[in-house]
Length: 205
Image (cartoon, rainbow, N blue to C red; front, side, top):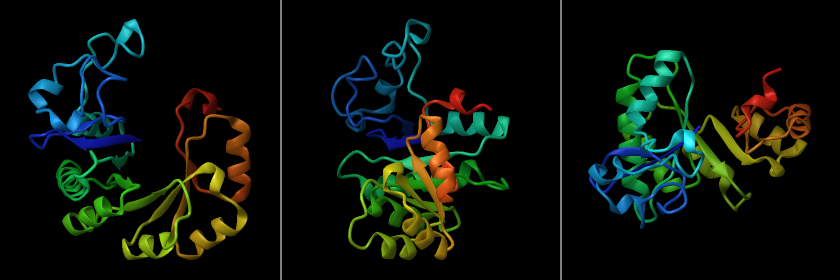
C-alpha cells in the first residue's frame, strides 16, 4: 500500500502527509512544490541513518519495482486538500498506463469520494476501494455507485453484520492498520479478506 499525491507540476509521487516537515528536510505543503524541488529532498533521515538522502519515490518507480517482483499494489489516492478530482484523475491515468496489459492491475483506494469518482471516469476498468474511518451516512450507496470491489475499514469497525453486508454486495472486506497477530486472528475469524500492516515481519509465518 502506498499514498499517491501530485506535485504542483503534475508528477505523481508517494508521501503520507500533506506537509513536508515530518518525513523530509523540506517545509510547507508538498503539493505546492514542483517535482524538481521535491526530488532533491532527503526523505530518509527521519527513519534512520541508513536511509539518509533517500528521495521521495514516484509512482512510476514503485510500479516498475512491483511489476519486476510480482507484487500487487494498493494505491491510496491521498490528495492535497482541494485537489481531489485532479489527483484522482491523474493517478488513475498513470496507473492505467503503467499497468497496461498486466494481468493484475493495482487497487485504487481513497477516503475521498471525489477522487474515486474522477478515477472511475478516467480509468473505469481499474478496481476501486472505498476507505472508511467511520460508517458515515450513505457509505454503502457511494461504494456501489463507484462500483467498488472492496471496502477498506479501520479494523475496529468490523463486526459480523458489517462483514455480511459488504460480502452480500460481492465486495471484499479489508482492514487497516493491523500490526498485531491477535487482532489479525480476530479479523480472520470474522471472515474479512485481508489486512494492511506496517509490520510484515510479524506475519511471516
